[in-house]
Image: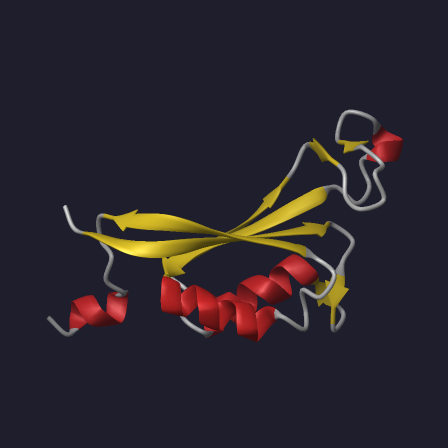
Length: 116
């Protein structure tokens, strides 16, 4: 099985965050898709807290507003570096984590596979 060095990008945002009148998680996913990131997902937490230090949970209705959302993306190092530049303005104020990763399995893009 083929493997390549990669990076995993995780962006911690709140459910209520917006960018140009749309949910921020959706704007980030759209941008990651536009620049050709291999895989990305928005994951809604069932509990968590942000910089305000207020723990929010889906179990208590009054605290279930503005739950944390994690946007994660995985791709080759150069693509994640490009993604960071591309989303920097919209993700301003968000906690962003970048970790080394290894892609295992089909590491070629669909366009690369068609060209074989």
